[in-house]
Length: 323
Image 1 (cartoon, rainbow, N blue to C red):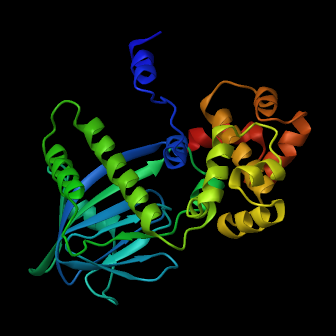
Image 2 (cartoon, rainbow, N blue to C red):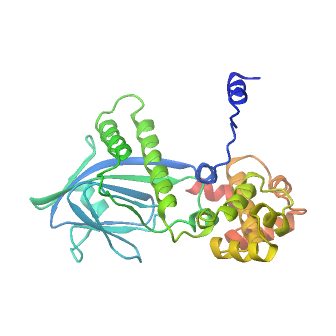
Image 3 (cartoon, helix red, strand yellow):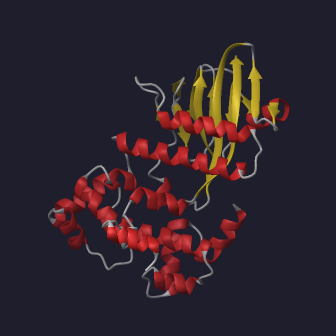
């Protein structure tokens, strides 16, 4: 028995504590890529093209954030916004300001040594700490469909949370000092911001959908945790209803309303999500993955996989390499 095993056994702790949010975030594998500080004087407007996901922490001043196809959100000093879907967005001083593509601005106004962007006029400067990140395990429709285009964590009456002040401080420090290990530190700190933001949002948002929506109901949350803990078990709706402490019909109705999918369809989609991750991250063949995920034949697995993702399982690894 290892030292860690003895410790967890002695203290009655489970090393594999079932935590659905952690499990999902582990599967999509966050990767922080870049952090910078922007000093933006009125008037200014920046357009971010689709691609990487972003976060913006307003250190001073105000701004408007408008995700592509979405509604604008006003942010003030101490606020944090997360744009997890990578569909592009616009950042401006006021609504209606002319915008320029960030790539064009960066070519002329971005200090690559200090990771500082200066743009706009000389008055009412807004200071923003921004960052890029990606989900190495995506595209995972079951996971990403639960996330909104923009997550806004306002400062609140008590001011900026201590964790955010500390992490943003260390981010800027690591970004501006190219010490050994700085790249890894920056990536991990971005990961921390994203995970903490998602956790804060999941704890307070009332209009959640997908697997996050199901966590808001105790009984449905127990079923989701059980489902994710053993996704390849031969589950039935009756077994899920027993875990939830409901009748079969009431459980099926509540699960569908909370999660947006009937329980067995959601389970099937989650199994395919795990299969896609296995195909991308391991050397297993399609036949082996089909067997591991509960399918009795390659043909049945391939049909289900293609219907869900839009491409054959044999293409999964190629698509991952192209990301």
